[in-house]
Length: 468
Length: 132
Image: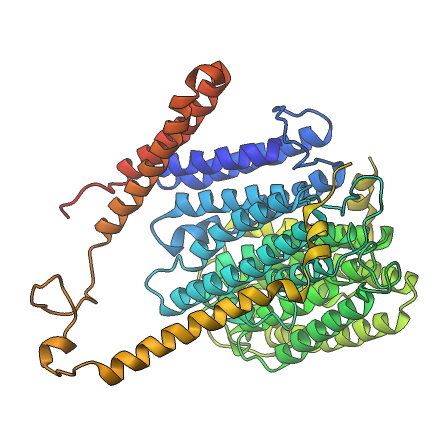
């Protein structure tokens, strides 16, 4: 509850700051201070100090797992704002509003980690996405940004329609918006085809939100068109939050609607998820190979990474749960790091990275570590994230799916290493970076690199918090 | 024992029950089609340029409707909607003023508080300054 209420209030605080504080350089300080308070308040609630006692009629349920996920997301946002606040200031005149929108998005995330009711899930998704539509179009004079915003908005509202239809079907079948299917009276209610239909519609809507193939078409255009700083936020924090909600929603229903428990109308979820995973991995990885722009390549790579995160949905067990947290942290760190470098480049193509190691060794090193983590090379957190996901699948008895995952991870090494090769083995006369690297960015990137390596050597530094 | 209405409904809903609705749908579509065809066949036809023009309450049309309009109208429209919603909430509150007591007053005060915050923001941002 702390996180939901405070993030909304902090959003309003920043709006008010834009109206009453004329010193524009103060905004990022206020935003950072608010984020620190938000992380603090969330940790306080994890430890049992809730500042607000509100009867939510069981529509929201706060547990340690969700609150810990909040902490990961908020800390990642803190790091993100710390690294890229000067870039956010450069987008347009509405710096404080951008921060406010980020806070409102965080409010949606806090709802998504605690919903206990399909309606709250819907609200959470909308509160999280609507600020993003605005942030995507925030570069108002850029046609691409406008196109991306409109595309994102139309596609997003369309998928929201599917989501609502799914919720309506489930309500029709079970008479409840509850997260788990309820039993009417003393009789065990028979599984209705309507509930199954509803679940599949929810699957489609969520696959859309987390950009899993074949519902990924908006992703490259939106990620490419949006201002790079905001792409960073969308591709990292928002994405993993979407996955958390996805898994949270389905882990309670997979059992009751599955083919195994209900041969008449049940779904073969494993088959459905396997198709989704393989399609996502295939589309993401293979298309990323052919990209000329690093930003677009990262958009496709985020689809590919979504394929790996979908493994958490495939195998709901302790391993995959841990894997999801590790993946969330590792993927956020790496994406924030690489985008922090990308926004500094003059040219977003692969050639644009030529000779970066010579002119800006710090940036090049940080990029390398982030890319290695995305590719899943050992000693980085990306390795353990992928390891936990694959181990969870093997534990469920689907080793062949793990092999498919490893093969596609191998493909991903190709396009990640193209950037590294451009930075280290090709030379350029002038500095490929457009802006000088400030010490803030260097500190931020150092934190990112340290985080990636520490979690890569000792993943239980993060996972132990799950069992407090 | 609570019995679920939708489950009941599945018992009575057979294809036969929908037969009258089907007949009505057919009749409605047939009626519309017949009327359209009949009026086209039987009615007198006078083709003049006036009949092809858009109806503008009897006033002659001037210019194109698709003109860029100042965004300020939009802001005022949005503000109007906001105040409209506020008033809609006030009516039921006014009716139940006594029963809801202080708790209700607190809730409404919070609602108005949120409202004022947003309104202050928009005023401060110069939404109602019309001259550039």
